Image (cartoon, rainbow, N blue to C red):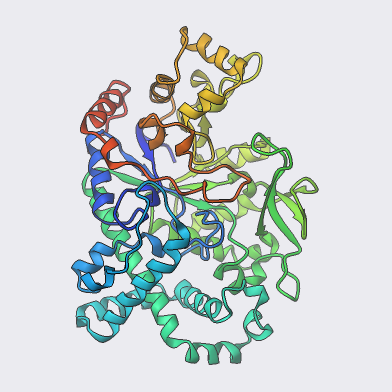
Length: 505
């Protein structure tokens, strides 16, 4: 895939403003798309849209196919008659600039319970017909996911490998009895997914009509506690008790001296090859229903992955193991055609990773915050003049500090190198804007900037600090008053000056 020259903004939907404690797929998402179009942007990049669990990370979802119920717009449900004013009477007092996922877990699920009850007892035949059509169309993943979530609730939220053996091991008789016993809970899970996909489809259509496409993000690995691992146990390395024998992570790097112990189950590539990589074909097929372009997180794992024996306290005692990414992509391309994939080729990148990326003509990534370290930084691959055309350049990503925050905390040699490069001394106030301009001026066909950098925000607006947990990650929301028309106009000027303005926006 070769990208056209364009630009976009990185913003996860949870960071949208709104009255209900988290960003939603309603009016404020449309306002953001309108602002993107005014600013001349071709792309809106989001993080994974799956249902999140412990830790609230969008990269650890209960399903690789399902959508996040937290994103369902409650005002839309009210307009459709599935909620009413009395349902909002006990609404908590939300922080407008920070997500409280614990409150969302309780209150929003109560609201969705009410919407489902209204649907069951007092809804239109048209809505029931649309729901039935959705269940039929998505049954291949939806049936397992809904049963998984219903069982998980029945077992008090325990991970699937801590359930009773019959449910854990998918004994057909046990599952048949569970489907009958938990039929209402299963149908409720499916209904929530119906709401999510209906709203997300409407948002994508709204964006497409305004010349804005969506770049979506899929994690290479699935979560340990996911319907994918439970229903596809033969695709991973598990023992007879459902415990992993090895797990995923990365070795010590820029972000952590002990590496990152992600804990995801690792793929049994030999087993996947035997069935023609069918799981991956389905996964990319599902992603194409959500996104126009697909950013594959940790792309290097398709060439070789860091295998850590389970259990482990950190990621140091691991080893590199080759994967079958080349054969997998050939199978996927044969089934689906050329895929619009961006390869997140950051970290320990070896010639086999580069070959895999280049053989399929996937654009890689470059991070400008990484461009100015070291002695002779002129050879840094991320320096603007060293970038490739078929590449995506970012000021930073969701795992980086904001650019303003990065400058405040940067090492002296990085500050000195940057000042030498731009031939003047930047300030804390000016740095993010200068880095954004360098990204847009570069030869990389696609430039993407986190909204935090466009708004010139500091470390307080950082989205995630890798290797950490707590209420500081994934919680940031922007102030709608900051999204000024004048800011869109100035960004549009830069976009036009640098040849990135699409004729469709």
